[in-house]
Image (tube, rainbow, N blue to C red; front, side):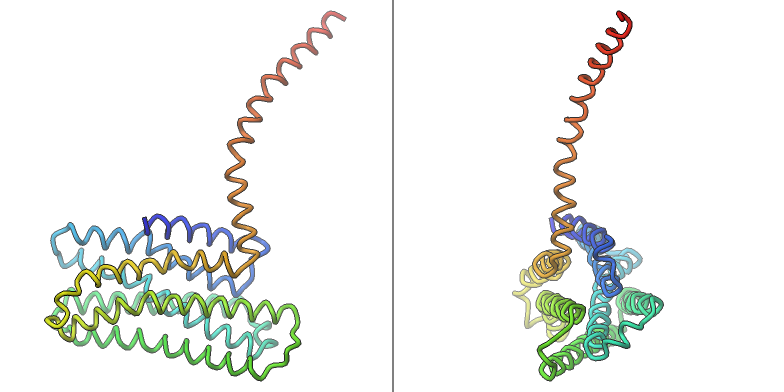
Amino acid sequence: MEAFLATVGNLLTIIIFQKKQLRRRPHFLLISLAVADLLVGLVSIPLYIANNYVESQILFGAFVRVGNMLPGFASIFTLATIALERMYAIGWPFRHRALKTEAYVVAIATPWLLAMIVAVSGSVLKNVLPHESNSYSALLGIFLTVPVILTCLAYLALWMKERSRLRRRQVHEKRDVRLTKTVAIITTAFLLTWLPFQILLLGFKLCNSCLEGFFAALYITKLLHYGNSVLNIFIYQVRNEEYRAALFKMLSCVCHQPRRNSRISQEKPQNTEKNKEHCFTETEM
């Protein structure tokens, strides 16, 4: 169910953010985040389920680990990039507006490149070189902690900037502030849904015997971890009026399309009968 909701919901999000009224450069980063959440539904969850039924093999285990780690770390790095972009937008608005599209291309590509490096390295250390478990734990610890610290520092700088700012703002500045608050909510939700699983996983690695009765909790927190890919969709609906309007318009078009088709199909015979009557009268005349 989570896989279906994550796939359909994030696919809709990607389509909506590409509409003309929402096609703004900061939203490109949100599209990248939605792609990562889409991969969770398409790849991570199915592989996680399949891994419970397939016999342990090195290559398949490595593939499953890459499929699980890539979208997760892409989300973490993208959220950190968004936080830095928002800090730049609020702190230096004129320079931010002068940014070229190439800067956003780099900002989108860099998190995915880093996520791929971390996922492949982690898969090699864990599955191909199992004796390097300490290196694997260190890799995860560093690349989980650094983006979170950067994100927190960026939002701390934003909060301090907002306290010293005048109340009067221009329209585009208000829009930037609202988008920043939305991203802050998304980041908080991500940490609340991601950290429980990571903390339990770290506890199992440090002291496996201490947490023998918590295997059920590990699966529950894993579901919570995957549930974050669905949560962002509802945050966009609540926080973004343009997103909500575009979503309702799309859904109304989909719902009314069958009625419209049936109405057209009903009108066609009537039109043909009218044409026949018209032709018949013309021949009589």
